[in-house]
Image (cartoon, rainbow, N blue to C red):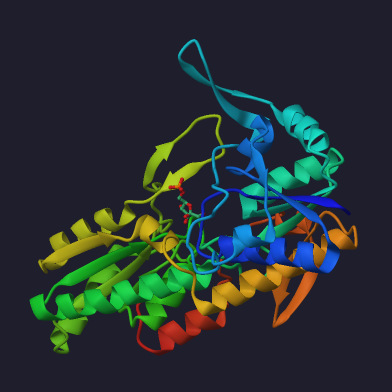
Length: 360
Ligand code: F6P
């Protein structure tokens, strides 16, 4: 393989630049490959926007958040957003991607992304493109890998926020509801909730009972704890409830945006307990800033392993983390289902047995 493309697609997260750093340096040093950086995810392949990445172009990018290539979580080439007569419509522009891939002389493509990117990549693999994935998302909801890079950084930011909310909650004798991202999985909420000592942790995998949450908060007050921290995953749902808070649903587009359930829960807690409650939605703060050392190392390992897969012409795979080993794994296996928290997960037991309310 002489020429490889690299793109980052889907929502950004800390560590993408660490992957690009590893990909470019290793491809050049170990395999004398040329690397083309494609801009804004699959949008760059649809529109033919890219640049050559030289060794020096990636010097010093390791600690930077975001991605030097840009990204897009709307640019699915099979349902590409276009405007016709002032109206939004979606077109299949996958052939443009295939044509540009060939006209750029690419022999392989490294696609850094999560579940959505892997779905798109799998469709192009079926159409004959040679793709290797790199697993990225703060949500940690990609199957077949123990962890994705970006997750540790997001948990770090959320934990720091919970620590800060603790002191102000304590000072004012308030309930603080803190909502974190995670889509349909509660990994960020569970990890940061445990690390930050959240009193209540609500996750999509366990539907909550608001009365049980309020009873728990009242009991804390009776025991002399005049404040409570409630960590809520954005995809949390009430028991028997038929609603999820959707900021926006775009018809005929894959994306459903979550967020805002924290406000509903905060209002209910204040109303039912009479305790002053404040709500903080962390949202995109979890995706910004410098990656943690753990994420830098993991992203570098994934990037280097992806280049080896390309050199060995082992396509349709991605490097997954299992235990402490990097294992080449089929992309199509990872997209069979999202990795949500299993109800017998040991961390749920850790939370329960250290006195945390899971809203059950
Ligand atoms: O998948 C990553 C993620 O940050 C989710 O946690 C969140 O629901 C979503 O992306 C938000 O996406 P957007 O960038 O469209 O706001």
